[in-house]
Length: 430
Image (cartoon, rainbow, N blue to C red):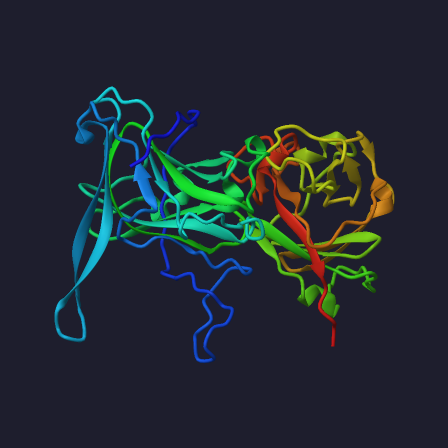
């Protein structure tokens, strides 16, 4: 047990995780028949907690207050329905977290887990490729929220935090009669307020408790998890692409582009040193209508694209930067309006093909038409897509469908609502 300084309050909600048990083993000078441990980009300290409490764990408990009135961390066991090779019931160890901040008028309450023998752990190479998962179970009744937060703390006492918000809880509920998973992607931690964190020298994971709760925790592990909860599009890139802009998309390059879908719309993208290419597919029972020739194009059938060209910007920013782009393609007359400069854009080519009610648009956006330099491969940018559907009389937009920011307003001004975008080398076409 170890005392801890008060940690700044942050908004807390829910979380869930599942775990795979993996033990950290040395890979040098190992016997020839020894199995090499599973790792994530050469990070092998994957197990944070596996049921039994030891000297790698501490929690705050003021001596003058009964532990049950603030925070109590105890060992417990579960008898599973499975039998071992001797026909005996399998017993699984776990922790029980019991806390009530109001009942004891408690100060800060926290639990620390200094896994891997309290060594400095280098997570710097996996921040976009891993998550911390907890396998948890309610002591009494199903839970739809958890008043908890977690952080990673380095050996300089710098901390990187995340709240247990609804997205981290698997299926949105923690069961009483079965184990549930809570997943905390490293990419979703609050990086914008933890710029000094040294991810190459992480000391421990800390859990902060608010309100009250009673929870079993069986395992905590670092698991493979690409990115965060933000949607992603990976755009194949080549120095030069030979595409015939006819709306048919018959080239092999398009087959290597993975599409993203939202509602009934699908978008693919390709890139070369001079252009971005987009392929938009959807069905519509009414003819496309968009009589507008300026910024009012959003009122009709239109395809909006927004993206950043500076991968170093804070991706959670709520304002547009000078390097952010946002334009709309009028799907009826093929004009393109630049919302950043309030002007029509010359040079963007749009080809359409139609079969019955199925539309396909093939779009070429020269970087020079937006005064842009080529993108860098294998770094993370941001991008958003939106498609507007006109009313039958063509006077206004009836619906708008968005890719990453569906259900949220303001993507045209808030890059924090955009998805992730990266350029990856195009595989050699046979």
